[in-house]
Amino acid sequence: MVPPRMRLPRSSLPALAAAAALAALGACGSSRVSITGEVKYGKSAEDDYKAGLEEMKGSSWPEASRFFEHCRTKYPFSKYAALSELRLADIKYQDDRFLEASEAYATFARMHPTHEDADYAAFREALSLLRDAPTDFFAFPPAYERELKSAREGVTKMEAFLAKWPSSKHKPEALKLLEQARGQLADHEWYVARFYAKRNRWAGVAGRCETLLARYPGSKHEIDALFALADAYARLEDRFKARQALQQLIVKHPDDPRRAQAEKLLARLR
Image 1 (cartoon, rainbow, N blue to C red):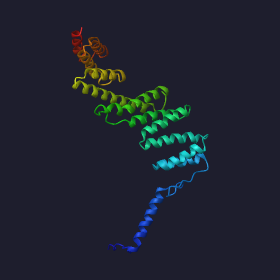
Image 2: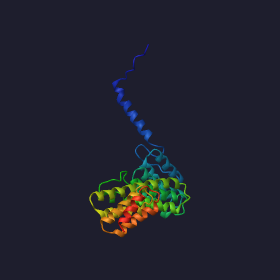
Image 3: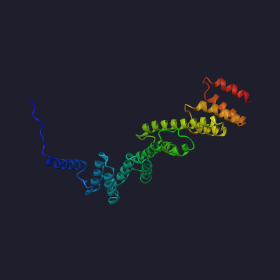
Image 4: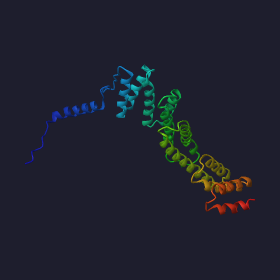
């Protein structure tokens, strides 16, 4: 036989709701942060640093920041001061404040060039810039120049990171991200070149193709860009540069099926 459901007196319901709310608040707090947000700092730099790490685990960014800031300012000569600076940059990154994070990582790398985590800071500086860039690069002009600024800066910073720390444990991820970012930027340059071609803006086509070929050599658009470059210069009555583009295509891609087409076009331009 199933026992009947227990019915509580109505007068007890508000008390239970209040108790549940207090329990939830207590669960949100920690031994170092009260439910009212009051922070109890430790007796050492290590104490505050570890408390900040605990708050980070729960994504409690404001509370974690308070511990790290306290550690950094009260114990400036402790090893945990520098680590706190790095964690503050991590918090900005985790909170999607990518430009602020990039600046914070750059400051750390500049102020602590011999620190064991200097390569991490440089890598994350570049990564933050790439994360700040839009995921869809195909914005309608003229907004694309402004929107791709972070992406281009991120590529430059990632290249600098790889050059300075070729043995860093972050190198494999950096190479993967760099290849992806370069490919996206090459896609965008090609998109804009085609945009200009549809509007018979041949100087714009030439400029975008030149940029694509110079900055992103070996991209999947390279052959198409060389053909488009030759065509654009031919329309601009610059036969010399048109021939150069076709000659470059023939030399760099001798086995491409379109080589014969390039040779025919080159013969017409002589």
